Length: 247
Image 1 (spheres, rainbow, N blue to C red):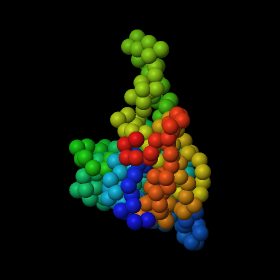
Image 2: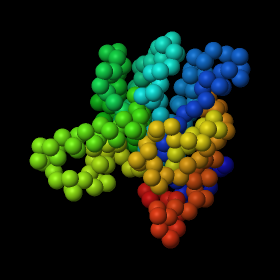
Image 3: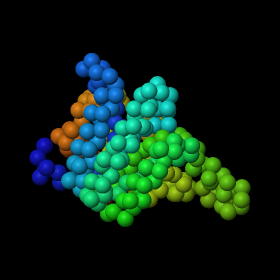
């Protein structure tokens, strides 16, 4: 799709990067090779998002359930995350990209948490694309942590139960200050959200593509944007709203 035809774009795109292992298996390669190839796809997509003017890009990097995977694979994934931050942080900072990490930070490994904090602190004043990395993230866990914070305030007499509104819940989620995703993409042909941004996805447009994540490139990304641009968003009403930037 020619870039000049991108007259409408989502403000916030979130992606479930799925299929690294199956990509590798289809080629007779170890799963770690699929994850390494997936990092290349991350770089391509981040670059494309910045080029076309998307404000927020959220990537589901590691779920709170992924710790159940074999120890060797988890170790490989942690190594790739560390390598990505060490290699790419300077380039992202130079490109004015702001990094935001969402997910449970309690009990994270001592070699991981400082890197995540460094990435956030280094880029905190940048004003171009905001790259949101969902790490050790699960939406039900996020909502439970938010409810615990709110319940503590109710118990302390700081707020009344009837003051609990969707806006108050928003303010206690990991994504506070980040607009809800306009578009959620999932690769690999699976058609489910898998505990990703369940609250925030209430009115998101969903696009599922059959390609595995390592094959998700600039052209496929632009194709999903084109699909989104053709949608009519009603947000529960009867009058359609165009899928415009900032809607």
